[in-house]
Image 1 (cartoon, rainbow, N blue to C red):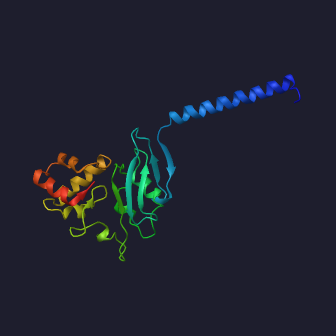
Image 2 (image 1 turned 90 degrees about the vertical axis):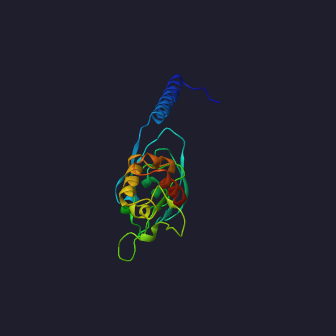
Image 3 (image 1 turned 45 degrees about the vertical axis):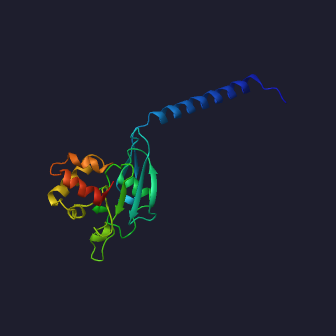
Length: 195
């Protein structure tokens, strides 16, 4: 093995130090990174905020007008738009304006992207009816909530507003904080809703 000259040792040493500094800086930047902003093709040119909520990941079920419906694991603090993007984006006939894409995801939530009816509006049958099964609390519309016994349009609107303000709902029990929902209504909600 040939002997290294003094200048070669200095050059190799400088390269090693530079690599160590770059690596240390990358590790430090990764640990202190805040929310990142990325373009989301599925959201019609909007932005998707992928923020680290500091907690465990959330697992959500994405269904309806998306390319790859299924169950996905996302970082805590993820939004509905991130779940739609993870599911391959919205299909051409999806009615994205019918859902709140900015709502924060909750673990166990179902995100249903409704599909447009032939008339161009969101299909009314996008969510389950009383005969089909429980309604997904994370994506229920005012009209769907209004079909539940004891819930009128005003209370249904309060539920949607509460859900949007609190970044989703992890449990049906959280709805008891809304005025107009008493014990009897809570039982109807348990029978007709899923988190």
